[in-house]
Picture 1 (cartoon, rainbow, N blue to C red):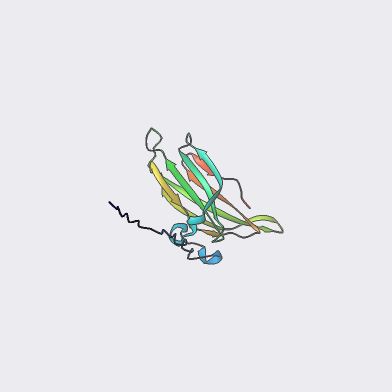
Picture 2 (picture 1 turned 135 degrees about the vertical axis):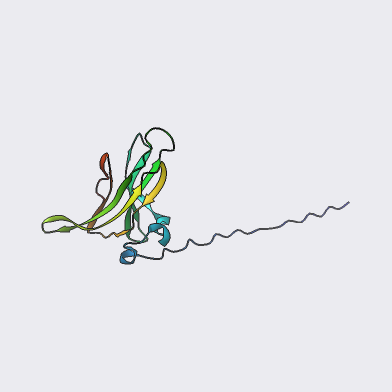
Length: 148
């Protein structure tokens, strides 16, 4: 008896990643998520606090030539779950003959929900600047170190 078997060959092709919708100055003031800049987002500076449940990061997209601040709160339990508002900021400084000077900032009021992931809008990133992320809350201000 002859058994015939049929085989189906399925080719899976990956579609190229969609390009970001902005670059450089056209990204300033826009969301990294809605523009696609978060696809290559790299945390270049981070700090962890509240027993490691919360983090503050400075994120860079090389493709978009932009930076932004990212705040993550993973405290889904416990007594340190707050309900107040906090201010998340990304700061850009340029070098001047008088030293570093703040050129621009992007900030956002975020709620300190127990589990959240929030970010600022983007600022331009060039070779002659530096950036840092800041979080101001009732307990004080947390800051990453400068990058750039």
